[in-house]
Length: 347
Figure 1 (cartoon, helix red, strand yellow):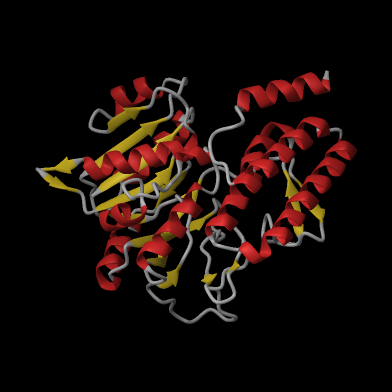
Figure 2: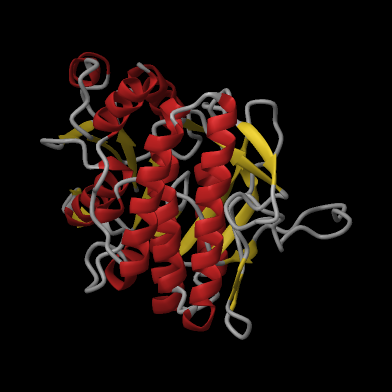
């Protein structure tokens, strides 16, 4: 059993994640930390406080997509007592699993035979944050991220089931069998997650690959297995009532992120279109183009009214749309460069 954590310049959060892994009632055989060239002393922290943790430091920041791609491939090659790991427990550096989380995931993996077993994400206040979705092959319908889950019943049963089928999931705690990595992960011809996505939707692409390779019953959600998120959404977000209901956030309100965090939204615009392409929505392509264009207009108008750097935002949003239309992955926006452009526009 190997736990894989991808980190970048968040040493304090990483410390809490590693503490959560150490507190598991089912002990781990190995912990691998993939470090996206952090410059905050992460290497020294691991060497001093976690000498048994394997530290894989990349030579540059490849984003979450590059980190998970490299980490999953490395974990698949790793061994314990001469044997490869059957499962890799995948997570970001901003989550903390509850002590019984791994034991519950393993129990369901054995009982259900699922190739991927997913915990339930919870905010610090205990509220459930579900980003697990359902795909409808016949209608080719995608339930957007953080939207109402089709797993939610109108009335909660007295005792929830031990697991429910799910199709899509995030990289916040899924337990992945090596069979899934070989069929749909970085070892497969499709090479998912695609490191070119850089950040956001890399987990969605991986989940779609699992779905296509292993079928609709390949993944299971375990409601009793909890995993707490440490980082709330960025402050200063502005909900905008929009006719683009649900395409970006899954709610009637379109959350616009402030300038300092908007570069992630730029990647999300491009990568969401690549998700649509992977799902094969060819007949709905023009509808998606219209939705993307509508978001660009909504964001620019709201940013101008709020005094944000609307020109920079519009330019990069348009670039993201163009790359999405052409189906191009690859890192195209450096966060430091983007923030410098924001400051020049404000000056």
